[in-house]
Image (cartoon, one colour):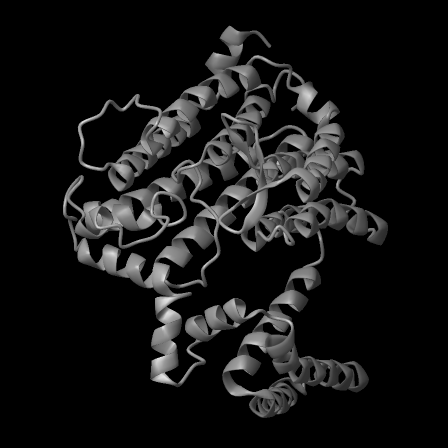
Length: 427
């Protein structure tokens, strides 16, 4: 497809949302990193200047994607995936450590984070594999291969350590569910997670009592209409109780202290007020200050460059993982609501684009894009407002970071190019 046809057929509404998010994000990066001296926005020694530079580089990434053949991404998806795996492995030998995580390659002028590339490559590889098997995901062998495609990069990222980035890959399971993976693959982990949390909060005894009450209720309410196999039910209850018994051992002996502190803060497990306050000042400090910054913004906010907590550097990493708190302080409830609505409309538009694809590859890759962007958005905002434990992942197109912006842009515009070309080649 010629460049002129691409520009005519591309979804400009999605591009509008993208540009708006990048602009608002940069404004807040400027606000959180501006030091009060009058310097040019093109001063590349400043963080906002560097981000502006990467916004410019992203423009060339967009041009590259839009003017390359769409089939290129599907044909070489497996190669991209293998390259990303090699780069992740190379971090164990040549990686640069930043903020305690060996997640970067030092290229001199630029720090490359290969986990960002791996997200794009894994979304492509998963879509390629599923389209090759014609979405026959109900066959166990195909399920195993698809799950391995998702898990391998996540396993390599965890020991960096970067559990936040590793978590993002599991969002790609939603692509599998969209294509027909049995819901039991989702139900079982959710049940185990629920058992884990309830055991930490109430103990194994109360979990066992709760399970017993549930069984009695099921037999009381459903005995006339549903025949429940007794042996599988008892086996399931036994497994649940055994799992519950293992929770405390895992929590105390497998988790590190920082992980235990985060769960204690999130679930309110710590009853000692003095120790709880100590946890808030260490592990929970960022979230506490973030909540206070958003709260101080009120309805309309304090105004651009008027955020006292932002100017006072109360919120650590505010230009990266906690940038949403600057929106709350300076633009208030109105500003945060506008940003949330903007993301919501953006995701809804991407769902519409994914559903209108003419090929399995285009649809599956589209849902891969949505899954990755949404998990970043959901976890980041949930973390900043205190609904989720602290997990260090950026807000897409918003947070400071060259690697993040470039690869989020690449992830999105590959899909927009596929969508623009969908009628020409069945894609």
